[in-house]
Amino acid sequence: MTCAAVLTVKDLRVALDKGDSLHPLVKGVSFSVGRGEILGLIGQSGCGKSVTCLSLLGLLPPNLTQTGGEVWLNGTAITHLGAREVRSHRGRGAAMILQNPMSCFNPIVRIRQHFIETLDSHRLTGSDRGMQRVRDSLEEMGFTNPEEILGLYPFQMSGGMLQRVMIALALSLEAPLLIADEPTTDLDVLSQDRILNLLRGLRDKHEMGILIVTHDLGVIASLADTVAVMEDGEIVEAGSVTQIFSEPVHPFTKMLLKAHFGLYGVFADIPALREGKRQR
Ligand SMILES: Nc1ncnc2c1ncn2[C@@H]1O[C@H](COP(=O)(O)OP(=O)(O)OP(=O)(O)O)[C@@H](O)[C@H]1O
Ligand SMILES: [Mg+2]
Image 1 (tube, rainbow, N blue to C red):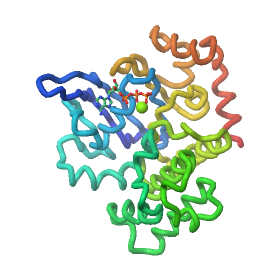
Image 2: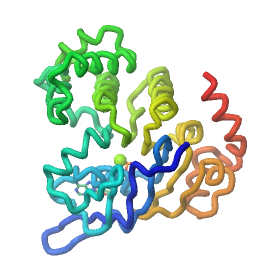
Image 3: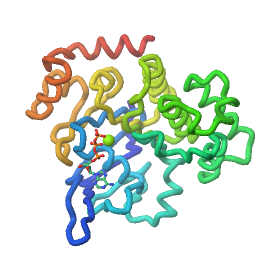
């Protein structure tokens, strides 16, 4: 793992705009993701993980607003940039896998067109290399016949297939940072395993920095280098996976681990677990 940060977040604040008042949802969150580092963001449903991810790349819905903090993407402060400039940093600087794949596709536009538009908007098409990269990404996601997939409409695909297509879309951008919000939800265990191995490969081979949000603490234990634990819009504890899973300090982290694993000493042998995974 090297240390140059691909993502730095300082005191990020997001609120729900209720018209006459602002209701805080994310309350001063700070973390960073280095090149080749996988950071897992965990926490209860509704604590603000997805809102945090969306705000990092200027993708908040209109009723949510960033009320404070700074975000640096590959060394550039993007918080005060205009929408067009943020967009140019997105995609080339960071790819994102959203939690709900169905909502990310226009159901009556073929998959091929979604790829073309995404690559176009980041000025990556116009070459055979662009489309070859698309086909390679689809194959990496386990589609043995990429041309067939490119010809389908989203409504002809299952949720799990769309999730894999969305990941392929993110991969084809070859960005140095991947933000993955629940990337393995809705997937069968074989597809989950494929995606986790792929993410490991991206980190190991391309030194991609990855921010992964998941409810599956087993995924975090085997994949992530570092963990940030979120409770009610705040990060209450952060550190290496080994440290957090073996010796949690904050009561919420203890509760989360206990609920998931039964006993929070159970992953004390994380180094062995991780070595096993990497050797596969
Ligand atoms: N568009 C929105 N309008 C109003 N409130 C929202 C909106 N999006 C999110 N929220 C609220 O913000 C809070 C954080 O939501 P968020 O989606 O970030 O949770 P999460 O930690 O990702 O949960 P989960 O693990 O279930 O995905 C929740 O209280 C949610 O109701
Ligand atoms: Mg979420």
